[in-house]
Image 1: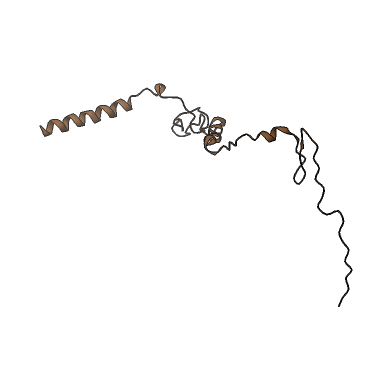
Image 2: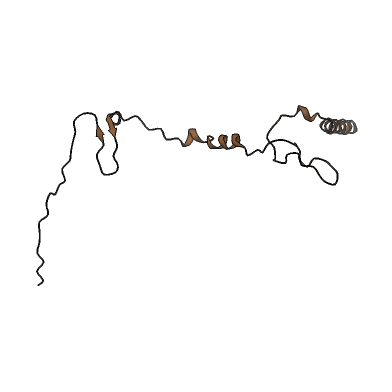
Length: 121
């Protein structure tokens, strides 16, 4: 009984090894591989690449997929502020933006400074 299990297991392993050795490489999925191109070994004349003629895996598609990978997690989505819809122009830091509606100006808090004469004591 024990011997028959060993024989069955060994034959299964042997069949699995034989089937992978005689597999049709044309049935394998096409994918971008290493950028070896059609490089040939000068001694034996065999191809140096596992998949000769394939393009580089770090092509434009790979870079684009890597760029959008974490967008849904890291994207900032703020709630809509309805007051920002009135803004016509944002002139810059420290200056009030131009908005639809009344033209509001803010006067500086100090118009003129008082002069103090320095008298050493």
